[in-house]
Image (tube, rainbow, N blue to C red):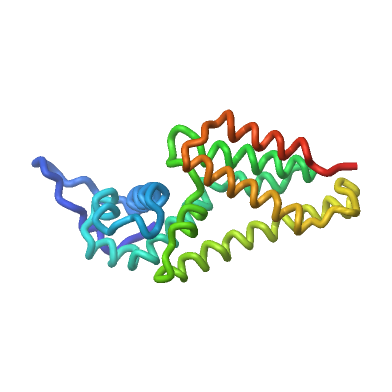
Amino acid sequence: MKCSAPTAVPPAARGRPREFDPDEALAAALRVFWTRGYEGASMAELTEAMGITKPSLYACFGNKEALFKKTLDLYERDKLAYMGKALEAPTARGVAERLLTGALATHCGEKDPHGCLGVISTVACTPEADSIRADVIKRRASSEAAVIKRFEQARDEGDLPDSVCPAKLAGCLTTVLQGLSVKAQGGAGPEELQGTADTFLAMWPGR
């Protein structure tokens, strides 16, 4: 990623200033947004974590909204990569299992903040951040549409019963995934969340 504003916050100690890395700065901003949500993340927190001044942030990434959307792109690319692989599972149940496993690893792992960035941001957004909510919802709808299409294929192939509505099944799965994220952010442990995922899979419709 290229950036035209590499003015970093000067270090307290003497020595050669660390070279500014826009990718590292964006990753740092992602962690702040993921922890605090869009509304909760202050510009002071963001600039401190990213190691740049406010003017440099604006010059390199745009305003706070533009920065957040860039972190969403990074989040989808690096943290939600499992979603694309899940759709390649040979069965619809396999798709659901991979999505649940990936969500649990991402949303309640040891290295990253708990919960889903999209869910955290839409729940916490005020009316002043409607554009952020709309963007997150649009991204979520695109992902769910891909799952619906995959389940339609499964039904056509006989993997799912004809009585199953792919859209409703995908909506149910999405609701469970979002619920796991909310519970993870609220402190629910891996064992409890895994139990929820296992129970959902146990009720999976099949021939």
